[in-house]
Image 1 (spheres, rainbow, N blue to C red):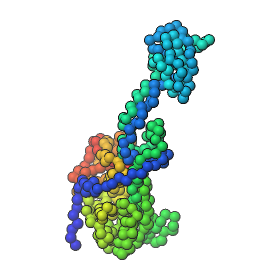
Image 2 (image 1 turned 90 degrees about the vertical axis):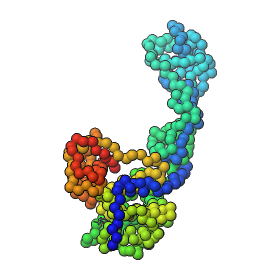
Image 3 (image 1 turned 90 degrees about the horizontal axis):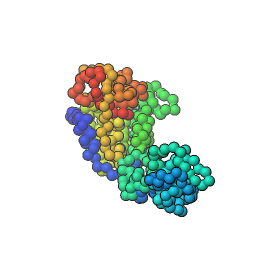
Image 4 (image 1 turned 45 degrees about the vertical axis):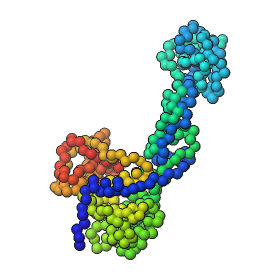
Length: 394
Ligand code: AMP
Ligand code: MG
């Protein structure tokens, strides 16, 4: 059997990054926009604030006017425009958010005043102008939210304040998840001898969901060449990207790479110098792409984080951003071989990374105690305590 070429993490990343993607967009009502990605720049259709307005409950007057008392010419509520202009010796009683009357350019807080018989006196200094100027937050035509922004409460509030009832967002790509393995049983059913519970469908679905993409659980198939090829072919109709777990290594019952080829896939790589997850397969077939991930649960998880997540983010219209962040390694690290780039589960607290007790690629409990993966590049054998390392939050 011909040796499968081993490529570096960076080469694999480049190959995946070269896959052309189209971001599909759809309009959604504002309330349905949470966790979605904005598919177009939004410019302010008008200025914010819309007009000069009071930032306090108080009295609007002319800032240069040092009269001992000011005649109150009207009361302006938020939502009702002023009727009169303020002249020297005059003021208008004004509520927070109400339109500033012509002539006035300052508001004295109610707490700094006394009003009696239609006349207001300033009793204490108010250092603030208490006026929100038209357009001081956003000018008409200014960029309000950039394409690719994640929409959460604050962004949704901004869009509402701009009067938008509907927003253009990226349509979530459908990500098919197909697990292989004759040993797999579903949580909630009884385990037979030699069986284990399928955890990869669930971790992958959760990872896909967390990005705002749509997971499609396409079931679990036994280790069988025919069935694997058939399942891949029928799954492809239903999704843009297909993720398979299991069946990619050198075992007697590992059929995924051959089944991908049989269904028309071109395989771009079948082996990455990474630990965990070395036998990862990536292929494309027309406008569809598929990943075959090694079944060990930590491998499946890590390969998704490192290689699949950036692709899904692109499909969702996010700008690709560097995912590695610096942290200080709490204790020294050593390994005996350094051919592969290594990802180790770590807990990062206040910028310090502690490696969790970790037995290898099946150790889900270790992963559940971690909030990041420590990135150790190929070629690096040891890291001393207190040195700066790169981590990738999960
Ligand atoms: P494979 O990649 O098929 O050789 O599987 C490697 C290891 O991962 C084996 O111990 C499998 O039992 C386990 N495994 C495979 N698929 C899953 C899955 N969906 N959930 C949990 N463990 C799995
Ligand atoms: Mg298997």
